Image (cartoon, rainbow, N blue to C red; front, side, top):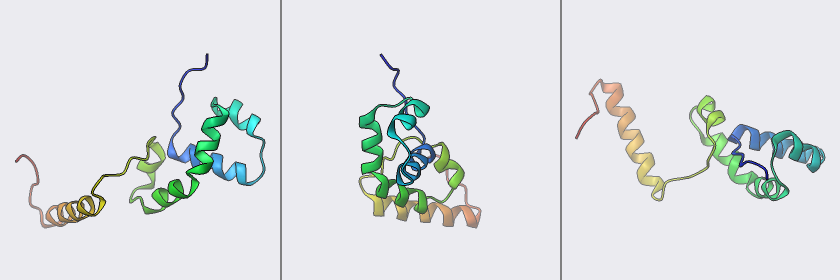
Amino acid sequence: KRKRVVLTLKEKIDICARLEKGESRKVLMQEYNVGTSTLYDIKAHKAQLLRFFANSASSAAAEQRRTLHTPKLEHLDRALYQWFLGKRAEGVPVSGP
């Protein structure tokens, strides 16, 4: 039985690009040590992956990230992050309660 493999977002995007070029699924399965269903899932979520990768502030962090979980209240999360960046720019320490 194959061990569970969790690919990074960068690897998933690379797989999408190689599938678009017409590369064999069998070659990709062997190279990344994943199953056919994983390849189909990656291909199905291609648009979501590309959108997340384009919207990420740090490409280095996005390359190491493995999951694509988004917050339940995304607009609240963005507003809080903008507030945090503003306070940090003012030099106000943001820690503790």
